[in-house]
Length: 348
Image 1 (tube, helix red, strand yellow):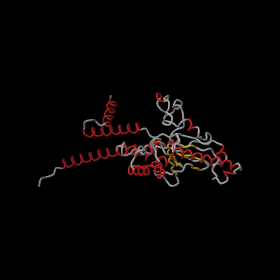
Image 2: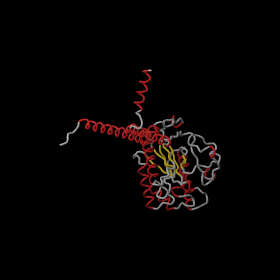
Image 3: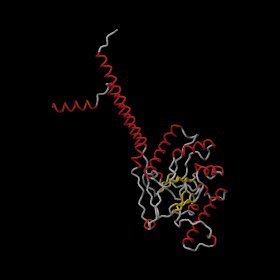
């Protein structure tokens, strides 16, 4: 039997400890980076958001306020344009942002203002079912939180692409109600794609629904004044507040010239005129809607910048490279280098 020298055994044990310690450090850096970039950063950013203070006569009279969160243009990628890696990254970010906002802000109702999907205008029945399943996973919510979705042009197509089949397919998943009232506030959810004004079957139906909602709201005001009679006698009693119009296409405006803020268009694009019935509603259709300007307060909430996440990953990659170089002896340890520099300074 060959003798075992204790020196070699100690060297092997020391090398094993060094490698284990290096692996532990690398694992800690990777885990901490992933934890920060994929979980904690959403809490740190969204924690700075808060509900605005509402100062209106309605609040002074003791009426409760409604906490509503608005999203738009989620554009869940489909099977045609969506690369699997791109979908994985985008949907993870949406899911983490939405679930974090639900937990921190505790909204009572969430509105998504159209373009939920990116390829709903041409997706097959199977692709549509897959997209809906992914949507329900990302935007899952407690039962006490209501989720209301407005249709957009990417969900059913533009005016020349939409069909009764696509609209019914959308309404089968999302509640087709046009009028939603809660805590004294009326929300009117409009299919703005159908507000073309050309008398098409779908457009005429959408306009008739708006007229019916207008009739109900007017009757409610008359009933509150005690003058409900005739056509308003059997109408349902709704809150007397002015309605909040919710739709995908914005109301008509000439351009973004008067817009500012972090989410505004670049300066060179703000003066470009909008195209009616494509970028915005037509002037005629815009005159049919109204929104109360006094009994609400609005605050914007921003999400983590992708550049911040990428910079964090780059810093972590650099730290991993330094640890490997130090372990292999190609780079002196920063701590050892600093200690030697300090000793040299003391001796001089």
